[in-house]
Length: 95
Image (spheres, one colour):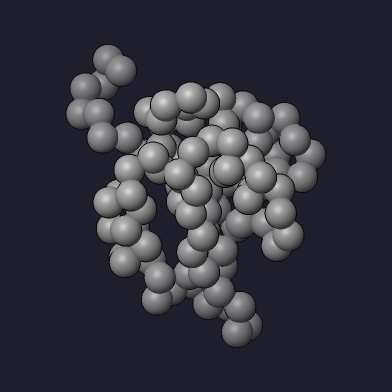
């Protein structure tokens, strides 16, 4: 979304490059998109200026999963107010 000539910045975090490409293709015209392929990179990118306006975060990633990334984002004063939307390929509500 563009407001006052500024595109909102969206950080996509997913360990599957194909998922990142699909989301980027869908959102790139309306938003400034940046992407990270793991939790560690996501935390660094989220804390960098300008901070993202929204984070789309995969839950199931090797190493640091999406839940841990979110916990760390919300514990950091620099990133705690950035909204996070979880993404998952799971179709079972039990997970």
